[in-house]
Amino acid sequence: MDILDYDNSRAEAFASKMFQFLNGGMLSLMISIGYKTGLFDAISQLKPSTSEEISQAAGLNERYVREWLGAMVTGNVIEYDPSTEKYILPQEHSTFLTRKSGINNLAVLAQYVSLMGNVEDKIVECFRNGGGLPYSEYPKFQQLQAEETARIFDSKLTNQILPLIPGIINKLNNGLEVLDIGCGRGHAINLMGKAFPKSKFTGCDISSEGISSAKEEAKNLGLTNVQFEIKDALLIEELGKFDLITAFDTIHDQTQPTKVLKAINVSLKNDGFFLMQDIAASSKVEKNIDSPLAPALYTISTMHCMTVSLAFGGEGLGTMWGKELAVKKLDEAGFKDIEVKNIEGDIMNYYYLSRK
Image (cartoon, helix red, strand yellow):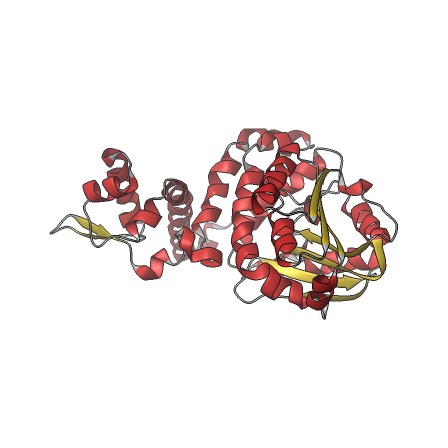
């Protein structure tokens, strides 16, 4: 490049961005700690308080809390009054940081940063040699995903997500046969089982730990209309058995998602419905530039969703496979009347409705 073409102002602007990236990455780790330790929950209930008062309220070591507060203050998350040496979390900030915020809670997502960091060196080797990392490399991923999705399911599943399918609530009240693919810890199935006692619900997942947790939750809820199976999604084919099949943020992780979609289609009754929740993204990178979470989601894709599929020689769709490709694959699998919808307040997901 000719030195005369070098734009100093552009270079300085990018250097400023790099500082933002570095600070944001580190700050995400501290936000994750604040969420895991309950610090945000504790501070949100306090009037302006010293580090001693905050640590006592949270039941934590003051020296660590004080250093953490330094990061929060300089990161403009928490406000500090030097004259009183007291800290306060503005209500406008706590809305996105505490457990009671439900679907607005974004601090829960910060935990993905440290989780992805645990496999960074192994992902670097995948860049060099290809292949991928299996699910066993992510022992805490399912737990985190269950926590993340529960905030959506608890507030939206039975009153907004399911009603996207015309007339489905009345049908569920009367009794349907429902299957959830990749149910994880089974929270969605258990919520539906509790809400619609006349319907029968089955959840399947390859994780024995997830299925065990699902069964435990169902037992605690006293549910008798749900069951859980350790089963690969490729093996679900039960010709025309189910009225409704759901897949919540799981299809893009599959080793063979095209075959799974075809198996789902075969397993539906005539005119049965398939409800697929997946990441709100385009298959075209240029259409994701203005998406507020696109860089984070491409990162999670590279370091988890894509690689777990490639680990078994799969298609490696990744988190950001996008709406265009998703609709194409649904069509190729034999689904009809395909619609893509949004839920107010859920910026993470699209909801694909289709019929056999």
